[in-house]
Image 1 (cartoon, rainbow, N blue to C red):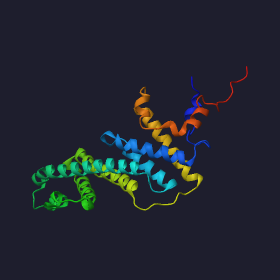
Image 2 (image 1 turned 180 degrees about the horizontal axis):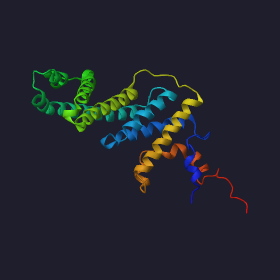
Image 3 (image 1 turned 60 degrees about the vertical axis):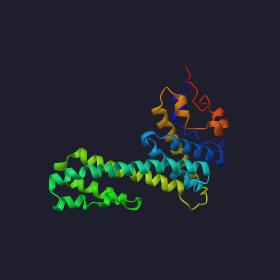
Image 4 (image 1 turned 60 degrees about the horizontal axis):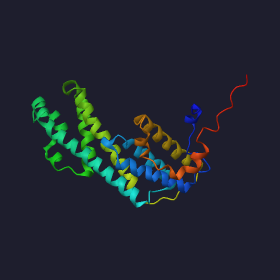
Length: 236
């Protein structure tokens, strides 16, 4: 049995893993997360990992990685946008029936009727989402908590995906900040990702490992294969 202490180590914290290998490992991992992100379940990981990567290495310059993240995030962002607009249009009839089209409450949701939602662009949709969610929260007594939660969730998901997209495709290349702290943060984030995927794909290592390319870590992995730093057994 593998010593349980092994699972408390940050396995990426090794002098055998060079910056170049860690960079490539992280880029491929991001690319695979973005390419296979069903329902946006890994969007939070992509956002956090992209931020940690850029804090240490600067902007992502690998074309394939950047393209995969951009494509995946753009698709998720458009899906989130479309889902919100469809729901806002669909709920207009309910708001009109509950409060009357000439009421001040109706104007909180639809100050310009449906025109804003029919003509919404990427530049203004986040403000529309926030306004709608806040209006729903003010009138939760009649509309219900599920209604409020639905529109707050639209805003939260869109914001998360938009942030990840902008982080990934930012045009300004920063210099790598060669500090121990920023590498630690990236190593820690990669460990969080590893454990998250391990929990999701418990008993299915092949599915979980499809998100990683361990070839860049071979030397370090071989040295730690059996948890070599485990304490000696107690003397009896």
